[in-house]
Structure formats: C-alpha cells, structure tokens
Image (tube, rainbow, N blue to C red; front, side):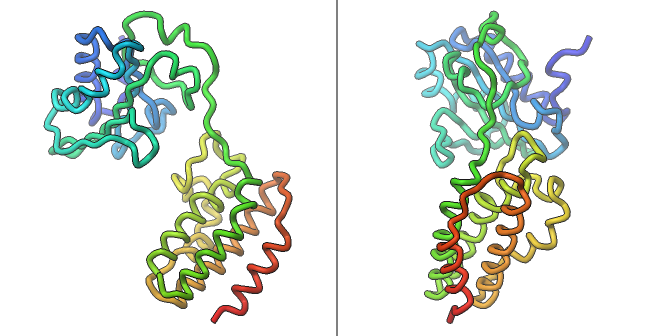
Length: 263
C-alpha cells in the first residue's frame, strides 16, 4: 500500500521518516507537511526537503526554541541556522551529511495555515487539524505595475554604480533586475508559482540568449552593456506580457537618455 512518505524522493525518504517519528513522539506537534517540489510532484535527485511542522499554539514558542535540538536528532547535522535573512524567523535551515542533504523546517500553528501559499503533501497528522483548515492556498503573484514603478529608478541606480566604479554592486543590481522585474513578466501565464529566476531556463527557453546578455563581468563596459541589454529585455517582456501597465513614460525616456549619454 502506497503511503505519503513513498512520494518523497528516495534520497530524502529516510530523514522524512525521522521527522515524522520525532513529531509523533512530541505532543506539541500536530502534523508534518511537505511543500516545494514534493508538493507539486516536480522533485528530482537534487531536491531538498521543505517541511512544515504544525505546532499547538501554546507549544510553538518552545518548538522554535528547541528547533536545533530537534534537527540534531534527525541525522548527522553539519550546521543549522534560522531564516531571518529571508524574512522567516520560524524557519530552521539545516545541512546534513555525508551525503549532503538540505532540510528546511518551518514551525507554524494551525492559524498560520489560514494564509498559506501552497497546499503541501501531508506526511503525518495527529488529528483532523489539516482537514478542517479554512481558506485556500494563494501563491504570491507579481504586480506588473509595482515593477514598472520601480524599474527605471533601479536602472538609474545601477548606472550610477557603474559610473562610480562600484562594479560588484552593479552586478548585484543586475541580478535584482532579472529576478524582481524581468523574470516575473517573462513567466507570466506560464506557471502558477512564479519565483524569481527559478526554472526560468525551462519556463521561457526562447529568452535564454537575451537573458545571457544581462549577465556582466566585473568590467565597467561590460556592466553597461548588460544594463542596456536588461532594459531592452524588460521592455520586451513588459510589452508582450499582455498585462495592463501604466507606463512611466517620462522616467523611461530620461533614463534611456542617461544610458545613451553615459560616460
């Protein structure tokens, strides 16, 4: 008989079973849910394991305090750290090995699930908490107007960094343009779960040659070339996305002149 654990990739199954066993033994935990590529059925041999651990409301604080100890009981833990850098203090990111294995553990309460971004694969639950959770999962969608309002200011900022010789800062900015502006419009209508540049090569393969042109080396002229290429590609995906955007025409014109006259 097939169980939910059987849907976990083979290289992750043992640690998934260990998490479930630990959860079953901890009365503060109500459920273990797998998200990410496992939830969507797109996992492969390179996938990591994204788990949501549903805690009792009164037990969440203690679970968070004990998160590293919990992770240490699952296998050979090499390092672990919390997720403030991605705005998620409820998250513990853990690396095990050998062989190397990446595990995310997010400790939430049943009420937190009311505002979830996906419906994961339930590996185990103590009762019917998940079966009675109201609301539908909503993956955050990009706002094309939000992007257009910011793109020209971002572009000018990167241009100034190039002029000043802050090339690594400029390279970081070019990456941000790809992730926050170009990619969301490039994959519009192609995936229900846009996520920056993730899987961009397969979601928009026809744009790969132009995307390559937006990548720069730590050279002033090359950074300027990549910035101009980013502007052209942004215009292309904005204009072909089919979404209604109030263009910041004057900002676009002035910034384009700035790049043309760049010295």
